[in-house]
Amino acid sequence: MQKVAIFGGTFDPIHWGHLLIAQTAVDQLGLDRVIWVVDRSPPHKKLSPKLNFPYRWEMVQLAIADRPAFILPDLTTHFPGHSYAIETLTHLQAIYPQTHWHWIVGQDAFATLPRWYRRQELIPKCNWLVAPRKEGSNIELELLAKTVVEQLATQSIPIRWQVLSVPQLAISSSLIRQYCSEHRSIRYLVPEAVRTYILNQQLYQEHHEEKI
Ligand SMILES: Nc1ncnc2c1ncn2[C@@H]1O[C@H](COP(=O)(O)OP(=O)(O)OP(=O)(O)O)[C@@H](O)[C@H]1O
Ligand SMILES: O=C(O)c1ccc[n+]([C@@H]2O[C@H](COP(=O)([O-])O)[C@@H](O)[C@H]2O)c1
Image (cartoon, rainbow, N blue to C red; front, side, top):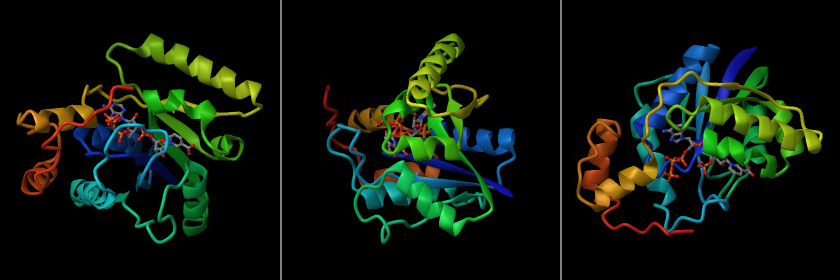
């Protein structure tokens, strides 16, 4: 059985934090590959307006180009609109049989797991790899995980999960967008190819975050 992890996100844009998490998962679990899934239009995110999907997809492709173990499938023909995690997993299971599945999530996304669509089917099918997101937050993450596990237990959903031992980088896509809009450098926050792409395409020149 090969070991594969799915890493889904908006990636608006992809940054070094994402890449470090994926590489840590490969090393810690001995994964054969990580499949990057760029969300077209995540309904759970109310930020506005998201960069068009093709730009976000292209930046992920640039960022992972030198890593054969990182795969970016083109799911647009199968899922032209939004797709939920369970639909993505079911689709990939057909392409990669004989696979032990993992799913990479940051601490904040992990907290929302008890509300994901068709979670009764999805959650038991994967080993959940959780990346801490707040500095010095080991205790906080333990408490969060306890809450998540309890919430799932009340829904009779068993979960296998583990923490990724990743050095925490306080980098977020929103920070990159903010820096761009303030004409600050994003060097060392994103891979060079991504930085050049953002500059050439003049992305994130205006700041549109909604306070919700
Ligand atoms: N620095 C980080 N440390 C740990 N997890 C992260 C980090 N950045 C992103 N993630 C996780 O990666 C996944 C995809 O993240 P996403 O594409 O939404 O980026 P983001 O930086 O969280 O974006 P935004 O700032 O717009 O909310 C999510 O599960 C998120 O929790
Ligand atoms: O399938 C769902 O119901 C679902 C609900 C919330 C989040 N997700 C997935 O969680 C991943 C991280 O989400 P985000 O918002 O941090 O980019 C991404 O792959 C989303 O598709 C999935």
